[in-house]
Image (cartoon, rainbow, N blue to C red; front, side):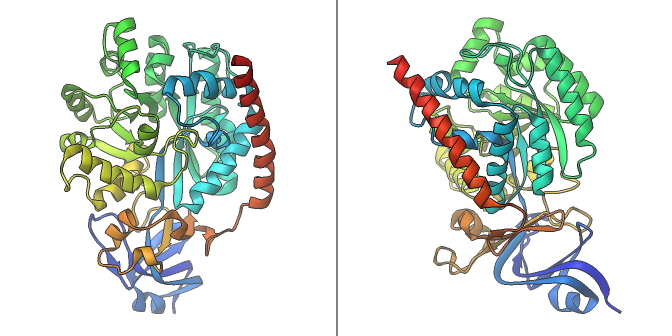
Length: 455
C-alpha cells in the first residue's frame, strides 16, 4: 500500500543546496505535515507515495526558498519617495522626517503586507526584519504564511533629525520591555522568531548594547545590526569613542557568533580577521550600497577569511526592490569586478548566500536553507521555459545569471502553497493595492509640502 502524503513535487531539476553543487534530474520532493519527507527518483516515488497534490513541473528548477537576511519591510511605502540624492540629504530631509510622521501601527502593517507580497512573488520565503512595531510585523508575517525573524528594535541615541522618542518606544527601558514582550508572543507563532535589532553603533549606547548582549545570550537569539555602513560612521566613531565601531563592539562583548553585521563596506584586514575569529555573520546588501554610494563590501576578502556571508536587499526606500534573485547576480558580479577575479563568488556560492548561509546567520539552518529530509518544506519553483533561460547547460548558473523573479511560478512555506502558477493563494492584492495607493499619495504630498517649505 502506498504511503499517504500531502504533496509530491516533480520538477525537471532539484537543487538541494546541501550538498554543494548537486543538481538532481527527474527526482521528486515529498512533503507531509509541512516537512520534507524524502527526495528521491521520481518513478519509484510515484509508486511509494499517494499524494493529495501531485505537482508536475516539467520545465522548472526547484530549490530552497530564498532568505532575505536584511529588510525594513514597511519601508515599501517609501519606495521612490526620494531618490538619487546624497545619503545624508536622503536621510535628513526625507526618510527620517517621513518616518517620524508616518510610522505607526497601521503604516507598518500595510507596508509589511506589501513587502511580503513582493517577496513571495520573487521566491523569498523568509525575511529578517528591522523596524518599528515588530509585533505588527510578526503577526502580519504569520497571517500571510511567510517565515520571518522580527527585530526587537533599539534606538537610544538621537538620530540627526529625529528626537529620541519614537512612536514605538520612548526610552531604552521601554524598547527592551516591549521587545521582550514581542519575543514572548512570537513563541506562539509557528513561522516567527526574533532577534535583537539595535539600529547601529552610532544610535545605541554602550549600556544598552551590553544589556542586549546579555539578554541575547539568555534568550538564545541573534543580534541584527547595521555596522560599518559608511565612511562617515567610522569617522564619527573615532571622533566620539576614539576607536572604530568594530573595536568598540569587541570591547562591549558583541563580537560573537550571535552578531549579524549588515553592510560592512568599510573594513580593514585586521577587522576581517576579527570577524572570522569571532564567528560573526555578515549580510551583504550590494544594490542598496551601490545606490546610496555607501561603499563596497570586500566580499572576496571575507570569503577567503571564512566569514559566513548572507544576502539582503535592505529596505525598498534604498534599493528599490526586494528582489533576491537580482541581488544574487549583483553580489556575484560585483565581487568579481572589485576583486579583479572572475572566479570570486561563483554561482553556487551566491545561491548559498541567499539560502543556507542566510539560514546559518539567523540560527535557522536546522530548519530551512536547504532541501533535506526533516527540514521545513520552504521551497520555490522557477520556470526556465523562457527565452532568457534557454538553453540550460547548468541550472544554477542559469538561475543566478539569467533568470528573473517573474519566472518564480510557485512558492511553498511550511508545506503550504502560497504562490500557485504565479498567483497568490492567500493575499488579496486588489484590496492591498487600493490601500497602498491611498496611503502612498498622502506620503508623497507630505514630503513635497515639506520640501516646498524648505525652499
